[in-house]
Each structure stands twice: as structure tokens, then as C-alpha cells.
Amino acid sequence: MDLLLLSHAGVTSKEYLTLVNNGWISPELKRKLKVAETLDRAEILAVLERENIGYITHNHRLYPSLLKEIYDFPYILYYRGNPSLLTLKMLGVVGSRKATDYTTKSLEHLLPSLENIAIISGLAYGADEAAHRIAVKNGLHTIGVLAFGHNTHYPKTTADIRNTMEKTHLTISEYPPDTPIQKWQFVARNRIIAGCARGVLVTEAEEKSGSLITLEMALDDNRSVYCLPGNITSALSKGTNLRIKEGAEAVTESADIQRDFDENGQL
Image (cartoon, rainbow, N blue to C red; front, side, top):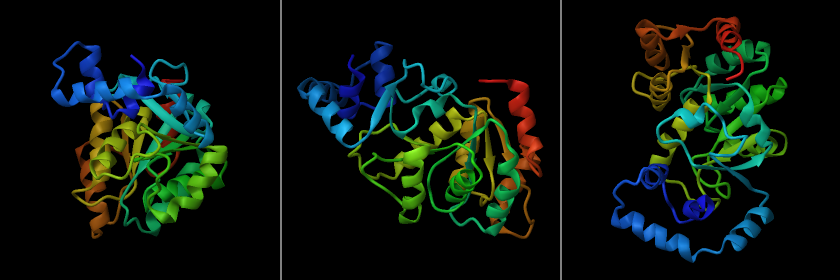
């Protein structure tokens, strides 16, 4: 199977697993396979080169070993930047889009002291943006996971940091470059953050939050989970404080995270 053509025909990661495992092929998947047969591989490669977008499949030596362990791993990753960063140990950082200064100040306290750890997040407004900016400012590698193709950007506030990252760091997406924004893709994006990371840190989160979905994914993938303890009167700390009560590690200093990464070596 030509994974590049399957991707451009819209074959999802779950549909790919169906093909690999000789499962039942739905009419929709049959349609996509027929579309793949009509695509011109050379033309696709020329477009990718013109747009400065590379790609690796799940069999490539740079594909994150931890990501390959999750059930519905992306069989292809498109990228701009330095793909060798995918071999580093990663800490996922997520949090509310309404994140306060508490998130920024806490990350400024925690991230600069981390050693040999790349920061992976979703280039969203709020906690994601703060994590990427603080990582770049302090000389840490950072990876942004897009919930759409590389020819789209959202939100506008992270356009400048994304541009910087694509020059000296990395952005990745499981979607072909012209894939537009769809709501469900943001949840799918979160599984990549959780899957790549050795641990996931949630900074601030409401009691019902998309960030906590990422944390649950991390737990399902047997990753370490960390939360910032927060003000008990703040709605943005209800989710993190509850998860700490349920067993997530409360993080107050970088050593709380570094210890786990050092003990587990290069994963």
C-alpha cells in the first residue's frame, strides 16, 4: 500500500488498521481506495516539495516509538521543520484556552530547568501558546501538533510562533496540507500529543475540559500525568485539583517531572 496516496485519498488511521488487519471494508473505504488509485504520486511529491513539507510513515526510523504504541496511531506524519526532534523525549503541555497568568508564570518557573526534554503541544490559544513560546525563549525544543493540514492556520495569535517553530523546531500533522479545519480533528490531534509524550502536564482546566481528555488519553497510553495545583476558588483549577485528588501528580517544581524522565531513560 502506498501510504502517501492513501492519506491524500482521505483514509483515516482506523481505516488503515482495517486494511492491515484484513477487516471488513466499508463502501466508504472502497470509494477512498478507488480515489487513491487515480492519484499521481509524482505530482503530490512536487507539491509537498514546493510547499516545504516533508512526510514520514510509521515505518520510518524517525517516527516516535511511543506514538506507534497507541491503538489508532497515524500511519503518516507531515511536517515542517526538523523531524529529528521526533526522537527526543517529550513532555506534553496542555491547558485551557482561557488560561490565566498562573499558567504562564508556572511554565516560566518549570520549563527552563528541564533537561533533554522537548515540549509538545497543540499550538492553540492559551496554555499551548504559552508552552511553545516559553520553550523557544529558553532554548528548549518544541513540537506543535496541528489539527488540520499545513496550509491552514488557527488561531491567528499563534501564527508568529508557528512560523518560528517551522524554521528551527517542528510542526506535524497527520493530514494532507490542504485539509481544512473540522471540529473532531482537534480531539484526534490530542491523541498524538498524548501518544508522543512520556508524560502530560495540565496547567489549568475547567471541570469539563478538552485538556482533561488529553490527560485521560495519556492515562490510557500508560503515560505519566501531572497537574498544577490551583486556587480552590478558581473554575480553571477545578479540573486539575480533582485529577490530583484522583491520583495525578501535583507539580510544584521541575524536578517532579525530570525525575520520571530520567528514571525511564530514552524512550
